[in-house]
Length: 482
Image 1 (cartoon, one colour):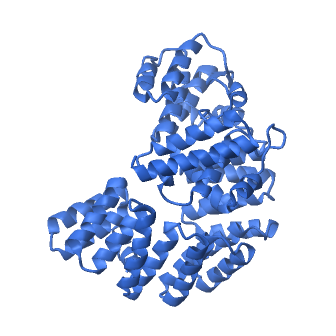
Image 2 (cartoon, one colour; image 1 turned 180 degrees about the vertical axis):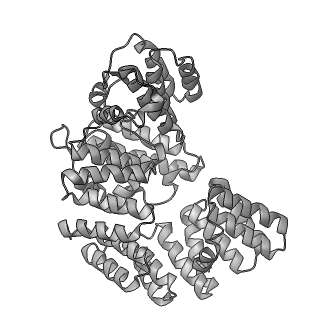
Image 3 (cartoon, one colour; image 1 turned 90 degrees about the horizontal axis):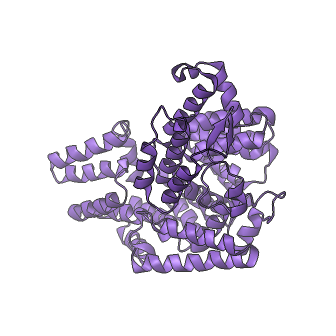
């Protein structure tokens, strides 16, 4: 970690610790520090970019969700407004950052690393008896040792220990549960497969049914209903959010629909159903769904803002602008809404209007690089490279390792026809995240301008490997960026 990032981490720790000291207790302070330090160990440290007060709010927000702080029936109790008022931040922005943190660590209902002792006492030990998760087993010590290895960062040792439990062992399904938890925390895409295998294995043991037949067997659905209370809309919504955070949008949609069947007047569930539909490319249905949420609560600026985004994707420009205007009227100090409106103007070459929106966003959050990038992209599109460079210099002062900044610098160098330097910035960006298909496309384009066909092909192949449909969208990508 570089000195600048370390300084930010220390400041963030100071902020969350002070909040816990003023509003919660020492245990919450320790959990908050632990979460910040875990974020700091990521390959790309998330709080390198953005306002620290927003990140501090998001850290507390995540702990609040894990430990039921937002539930009035629990002690202590805090509302989301209490957190945001303390740090003087916006709830919509904070909730988005919080979901980024949750997604970063793939937290699940069994993920208790950031739970308080009281909450942990109520978390089961991942064994199943007649369809219910229960704590006792002869191998508790074994699994406690696995868990200790896991929380202390000895991931490979924990997994190796679990591998000693073979399929003929009565504790095999429990081992699969633990494996799914560890892989989930590690960010491994196979985590859900192991979780499902654990369910199938234990269901097979419980009823003596071949696990190969369980998927099509009605008993399997009965088993799942005992894991998730199908009569509780809040529990169904929580399960949907878990799938949403993992990017399992089809499964998320199923749970949101089940929750809405019980209570169709849940604006928050409708909102996330709309976001899920948008992630699946179903923008028309997303608009219809968000309209239902707006009918229930027309004062939530998030609903109008995202409806604007959905309509923009459907190329209904005037309607999209009206939605952004409504969102701005409800929450004029949210820079995200201004940048969304500015991006829409930029897409349709309304450069002066775009600059007005991005300028307002920069006034509201001058240290948010995303807002400055909007200014840069607009000036590049206008051919005003001098002003683009001025704002790039501002970005560099905030964080010269920011991904958006590196990509914008590459675009700037490309437009200046400084092709070797453009490739240098593409490479810096890909060193941080080599799964950016669009960046591989632009790097390919740059090599094409250099008449280097061999490297061009390598970059195109890499882009296609990440996203097989990216080549078909290449013209649209280039048109949107230039």
